[in-house]
Length: 268
Image 1 (cartoon, rainbow, N blue to C red):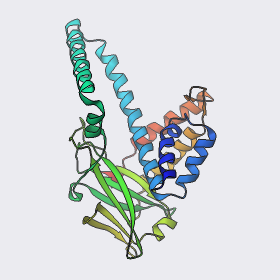
Image 2 (cartoon, rainbow, N blue to C red):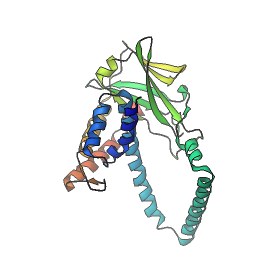
Image 3 (tube, rainbow, N blue to C red):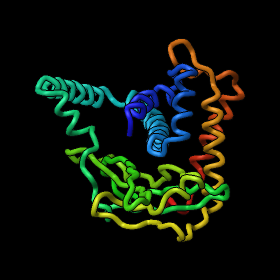
């Protein structure tokens, strides 16, 4: 990864949130078209962006329900919030940067036997990289590393977690962390699940890749349509997304609902 890659990755959150300029967005899109690691990183960030939107929507629903609780229940919640804030201030005073590193930076490699990586080939030749969390709720992230061994390109796919283990309320949903185009698959000799000396060979040049299910084909077709429409919207001066018409807003919401209703067999 080069210094230019670091700059591009710093711009990615602004592009996804529609807060970057057109030149910056074009620079990011142009870069990821030619950089495997950054494109995979970008795909993962967009997935996390969609997940964050869903979590924010759930949080708003919970807030509306909380308003209907009795006064005693509200007082207890308020007390817990105040206590939580005080604890947060103490932790921040004691060393915010160190705590952030221990709880937010993904530095600990997860054993390759605790998750699964599979491949599915779409009709257009692109290959979906599917992650199976085995029902885990451990907070973690997918990462990639492409290396050369004996002159051959090897792609490692692995999970990492923060130093301090954390868990979500519900198990992770299995999903496709990225799609690899045909020309990049041709340049790879092997795809491995894990990192370093601890890995499992998922695919090697010459091996057949299972065809994607009809549900997966439908999901990616709708997903591409959704992101094309989302990225075509204008932004306000403060960087917020501005839907040009009620029809476009309804179309985005319809696509989002359709994506949620599709059950992809490879991710079950």
